Structure formats: structure tokens, C-alpha cells
Image (cartoon, rainbow, N blue to C red):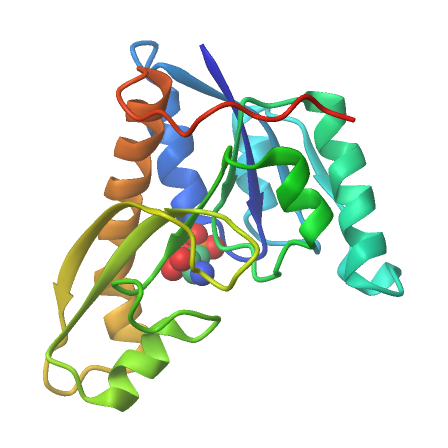
Length: 198
Ligand code: GRF
């Protein structure tokens, strides 16, 4: 059984979908802990499912590196096989990526490498494209630049706002994320070995 830690910043709707999927005894992965960089609304899903959670508050640290060191320490307590960034709106510092790569994946509301970064939906709208998409990638040191594991196109409709377009993208993100986690757990997708922890 693949053990998974999920990190969030927001409402956790993608997290919720993964929790629902993993609730099926036939699903080959189990979410063992949920972490956040703030008192995120999505932590309520952890409570609803009886799953432990932790917060490493971004504001409490002087630097990204110090914040990351505490996040890493929390993750090591649980030692998950896979870390899923599901709307975590922070870049992980190099040391955290190095410690857990390649077993960190991220969902992104655009068809990478198009529109990376924190405003993927807004940027697609501003560019006036007819379609954007959703992607699931392996996290590396760049901004949404790691290997693409799954992606799908999503149309932009006339009159779309950032909110309406994002709501059309999110169900696709959820489906892709659940499928990627399942494929990793079943060995169909091999991310490669994690270097031994130091
Ligand atoms: C997702 O679109 C994610 O890719 C983006 O933020 C959204 C997370 O939403 N970075 P939620 O917290 O899962 O509702």
C-alpha cells in the first residue's frame, strides 16, 4: 500500500477528491497525513476523515529554508512514500525537494509548460487562448518545470472569469491526480528511487 502525505494551502477540494477515492478499500494508496502552510480550510477534510494533520505556518519562519526544514522534519515523522502538493501555494526550498525527489508530485491548473506559476488560470485568460488545461507533474527545483505525468486540455468559454474557468479545470485536475496516484501505487508509473535519507 502506497502511503501518501498531502500538502495544501486552500480549500482542499482536490484533497477531498483524493480522500474520497482512497476511501474505497480497492484503492491502492492511503493518505496518512495532511499538512498545510497555514490554518487552511481544507484541514477540515483531515478531521472529517480522521486523518492526522499538521501546520507549519509560513509566517512563523524567517526564511523559506527554515520553513522548509520544519516541513521536512514533520514529513520525516510520517515518512510517506509519496508527497502530493494539492494547492500548496509555496515553492519548496531546494533541500526539501532534494530530500524527497522524485516522490513529490504537484497538480497545476494549466497545460504545462504553458502558464506555469501561481496564476496559471488568470494567465491563460489574459493570453486569450481558446483552451488551457490541467497537469500533474513531478516537482523539481523550478516553477512547475518537472516531468509531466498526465495532462488534459480544457476549453476556455466566452465570458469565462478566472473563477468559472478554474471551476471547469479543477474536476479534470482531480481526475488526473487520482489516476496518477493509482498508477504510481500499482507500479504502472515509476518515479524512480528516492536517495537514502541523510
Ligand atoms: C488547484 O487548482 C491547484 O492546482 C491550484 O490551486 C487549486 C487548489 O484548490 N494551485 P483546492 O485547494 O484543491 O480547492
